[in-house]
Amino acid sequence: MNDHRTESSELKLERLISGVVAGLPTRRAPLTLEGRVLAAISEGNTPLARVQGFASWPAPLRWLAFPALTAVAAGLMLMVGGAGRDTADLARALVPGGWTALWDALRATVEAAGGAMALLGSSLPGSWWYVALAVLACWYAGVVGLGFAAYRLLRTRG
Image 1 (cartoon, rainbow, N blue to C red):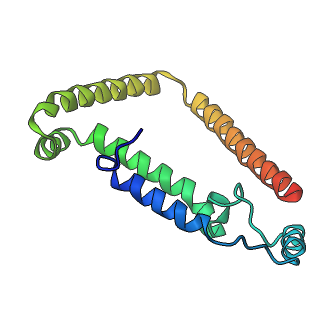
Image 2: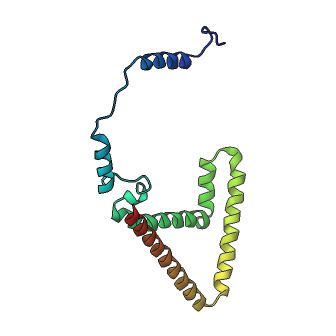
Image 3: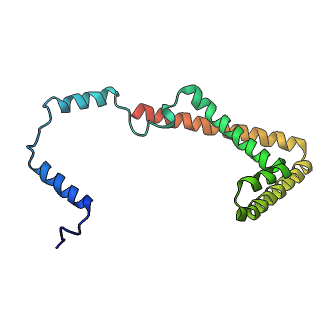
């Protein structure tokens, strides 16, 4: 059995609230509540949980979110890969002492990957790049199209 002298204050508070609530009379919901709730759901006035989030953003923000995030990611890649010594000095100033070796290893890896990409880019014919760009554009259009189709399907069922 619990000793009342050693039990936590949370347990005491819970026991006190339970005793107070147990003494209250039960309240019934209004008779019209069920009808009003069902009418609001059937009219679609109640937003569904799955509709909230990205779909509730204003349309211009939704259209600009992906290109903006892509531009930020590309800028970070260029900053890390192309700035060279300035980025290393910045990292040494911002990162605690033991982490600079990790930063130097990461920078060397990014520079090696950049060199491999430059070698690959110079060895491939120019027409291949146009084909790759066309394939990427078709893939992107397909993903956006599937997203629109899924959105419309969920919207008409919801």
